[in-house]
Image (cartoon, rainbow, N blue to C red):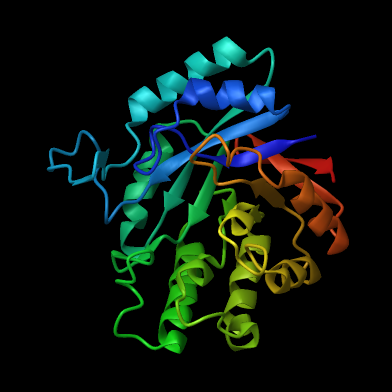
Length: 276
């Protein structure tokens, strides 16, 4: 069973990968299932129908998913390719504490199979530009990142898994911050995730970015399992054809080596377990 549960298309501001082509490529790569998970990042991006001016980064609009067109397109792609591959409807919610009300409204408006909860920004400051890290010590920005995540999972419950839980590592120019220094807050986060019946994602993009560890790290994956966590999805975080389905088999082997026996797909926000 090969499933890619973190897939971006032309509906994300950082991708121009046509949804139909994603489905065709997934079939060619012999994937059994994919879930479209395009970006919503309130606080730093606006909705298409918000009436606010849309800022462009090059040719790419800094806007959230065009929701009606997105949902319509997914249904069309399901009809075109549903006899060859299972296609699920999802989104990636880049939540911050002050944007939670907007996500609650969005969740109530549409039907989803799967939702990734990601921390992409804190206080509307991006990691990839170093705006968030600037003028903070490595200790301060690492701890602040996980503090935001903790407050979000305490307050927001309409999601499936935490995406790339230690994403801050990818943008930490000071190197890897010691796990033991943030372990207490990570443990607190994971206990809430498990108690709420949610899961975590293992994001295979760590390999294409040349990170020294998985994402989340082996330490986090071990801690999650030790705490009783069982729900885990595998996603490539694909934005281009070469990303789609990449390193899924290697990631399944890593999970087996860490003591996991199953991974999950989703339907109507409920996990479905599969043997690794």
